[in-house]
Image (cartoon, rainbow, N blue to C red):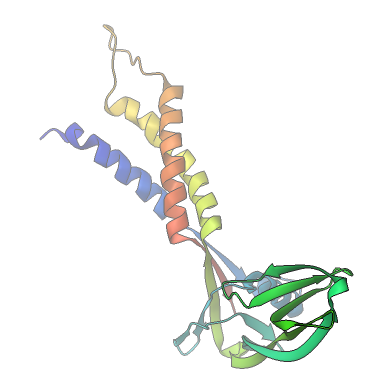
Length: 226
């Protein structure tokens, strides 16, 4: 059986396996921080606006639909609440009106003093604009005490892509150099005529692309242990 017939598939599998087995996670532990407060501060900063998965010590898994926050030794999920209050401002102090999303009636008023007001416009009368000011607040709902939490984790696709591209570059370069010894042209003295640098760059370029795609799809994992 001629194994070299399957060389392209072999190289591809070797490259992908090398990237995948290199690991794509980073774990944080409270013992590495000067204080619990520093750990909680870093945790809250890191998980802001992230879709996280919470694993408790009783092996139950929770996937909050909104952001989470660690406060007073308790893990909370932040539920957004919007309230509308009727307001009005003179048209003369409105600098611009910007659409703030997919809903046509929701806008953002930019005033001359640079204040931005999320609003729903009602109409104008007597040189004033009438609208409902959208006031957003967050309600903290407890998930579990910190001592009941095993870990909180999330994945970052762009960090995964960067990691995959880096790992793919070097893994691909190694595979490219190995390609010379699998199949290449030789002179009459049996010496390899394939330039090593060319093979390295070709493999590295392929690894850069493949690693970036795989890294983006799988994401780079961040795990906070408690």
